[in-house]
Length: 107
Image (cartoon, rainbow, N blue to C red; front, side, top):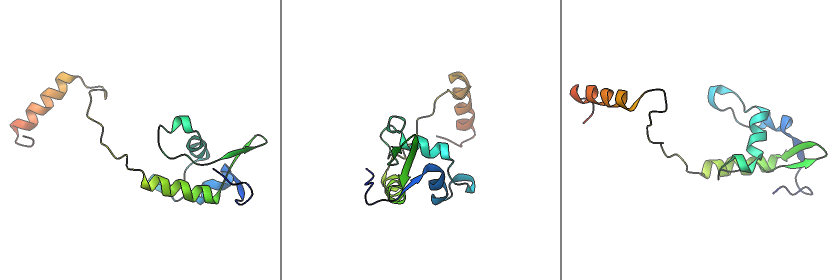
């Protein structure tokens, strides 16, 4: 929660350059910051504290530091099970497994 009396409020546009560079050596886009402020889209992940002043969503440097610390502490690095949703059928997956087994690559 942002303490509006102790924290200096900044717009999401001003906040974007304060984040470290992420994948592709780019800083997060403003729309990414907006998404991080929406709790319903985060599914249990840390949310960037924000408030609305007039029609503008604002955050603070302190909120950014809290968000980064909470993101680092989150341990949701589970690997999703492989599915055939990438366009391949289950039959193709079995065929690939059979080829890899016959080549001795997988057991």
